[in-house]
Length: 55
Figure 1: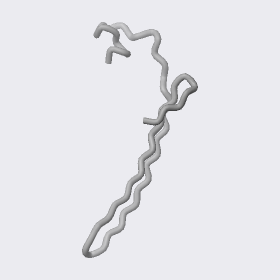
Figure 2 (figure 1 turned 90 degrees about the vertical axis):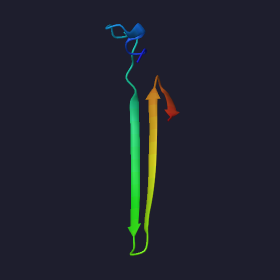
Figure 3 (figure 1 turned 120 degrees about the horizontal axis):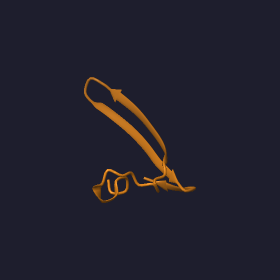
């Protein structure tokens, strides 16, 4: 929180920049009378200042 409110004061940091976030989640489930299987894939990436960083 110190990046948004420096020194825990009620003043917002003027140097803040919004991040662009991209997220995808895919899932599949298979169920029979004897078992249940689930498979999930999640991809999350953030982009600031023209550089891409995978989270």
